[in-house]
Image 1: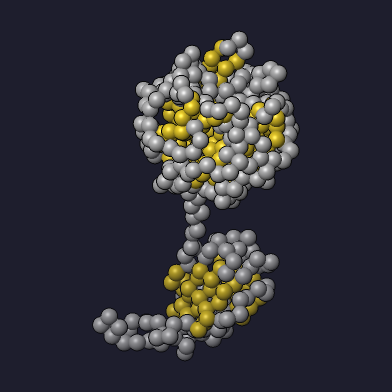
Image 2 (image 1 turned 60 degrees about the horizontal axis):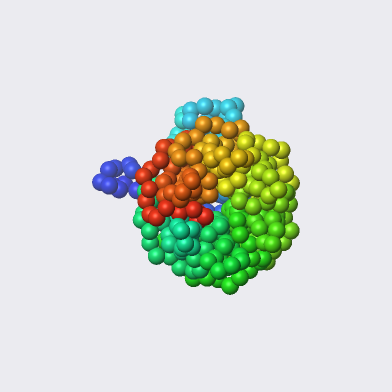
Length: 424
């Protein structure tokens, strides 16, 4: 007999206790389609390439124990079948098929007697929940309050916007921002108080602190747009105006390093909106150049911008976009259509990047608004110009509904930018 019966364990006669050293685990992972096992041993069964039939001992004794474990979490794909080798299993004879086909399962069986045979004392599956942290906070920064500023307004996990706080870096407007590195943000490019455009960037820590200027990268430009893409926390700045409208792009690494300018795709334009969607994907939409546009351009997980997608919604400029919900959805809202018609309509984006037609929005119609995700599954639009600069904000629920105005906080501002940051 390979098990050990110890009397008076926990002061109860006849209690079966584990052998002091535990089971003798086989060092060789089982990968074959069949294996014959021994009592008193544990086996790692890898069914990545094929199912496996496990033959139990032919002459077991009471208390014999065997443990089997799903080595590669593949039993749900290729099951383990037990051959009880002439003995009963849970009181059923050997003609019954005993399969185990749950991912991450481990099976601990003990031989009871000739009537019941082998009995599972545990057959639990170890579940692995892939917890992906989500952005919880947001930041609005820089902009034009009547003069160019570098102040910031932090947004809490509940969507409450804080009053103005000191920022850092060159005061400017008409810049762009995106989340990078999973929980940080970056502001870049824009129109400083001095004439011309700039290519400087400012990194934001995962506690919302804006860093000093990082030396110019790429081509100096204003009114670009930015999105997060990929699965390693990269970001992308694209489009905008240099001496003329462009569709070039600058990729940002997961460490916040901005690469030099490379070719983009789609119609050259500026003052468009952008957001992430799906898993590691991005989308740019709307904007203006020789006219106002309703086109969109999808960004793949490598940061490559796709060609124009046919018109969606009303052509407009100075709109903004953000993710919402937990299923990879996003939305664009607000903006300026032809004839200087300010709107608060919204266009929802599904998890494959299809932009829906105009839907009713809420809040003060305005342009030069900015947006970011917050609270794990919600979004916020804020600031902008409704004929004069404003500081109102509009929260977006996790079902994409835009709420009415929240009273202005901070100094009325237009031409600033926003991004999500922080996991907690």
